[in-house]
Length: 188
Image 1 (tube, rainbow, N blue to C red):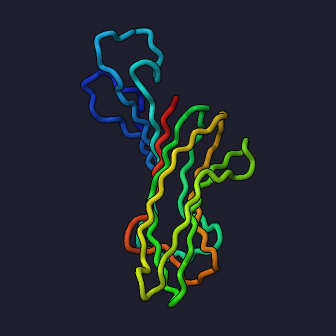
Image 2: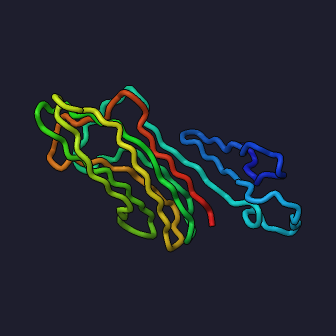
Image 3: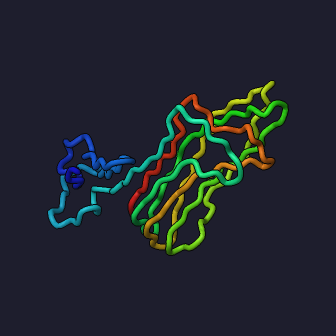
C-alpha cells in the first residue's frame, strides 16, 4: 500500500492509489486553491486541501441472479463517517423480465447501517416497472443519492437492495454488463 498523503504541490496532477485486495480504496486530495498565500502550519485536510474517499462495488458478467424481496446486490463500506460528511452514491443495475406476460414492478432501495445506528436505515428508494417479454423487457436502471449523516458513524455499510412487488421467479440481474455502486465521501 502506498503513502496516501495529500497533494504536495500545485503541479501534482494524479492522486496516489491506495489499492487493497477486493475493492479499490482511493483517497484523493483535491487542490482547492493554489494561490500564493500558503500557510506552513496548516493541518492536513484543512485549508486548500479537501479530502475525498472513493469506494465501489461491481458485479460483472456472467451472472444471473434471481430477484425476490430485498435481495442485496451491491455494497460499500466506510470505516468512519463524520457529521456533515457528504456521501454521494450512484450506480446502475441491468434487469431483465423473462416472466412471459407479467409486468415486473421493481424497487431499488439504498440502506445505511452501522453498529451505532442499529437496524439499517433506508436513505433512498425508487420504483419502476419492466414490461413483459413482448415489450421492453430489459432495462438499464441508474440511481443516485447524496447522504449527509448528522452523527459520527463507524463501520458504515451502504447496501443496494432490489425487490419485486409481486414475487416474480423470472426477474434476473442481467448478464449483459457490469452492475455498479460508486460511493464518494466528501470529508468535512
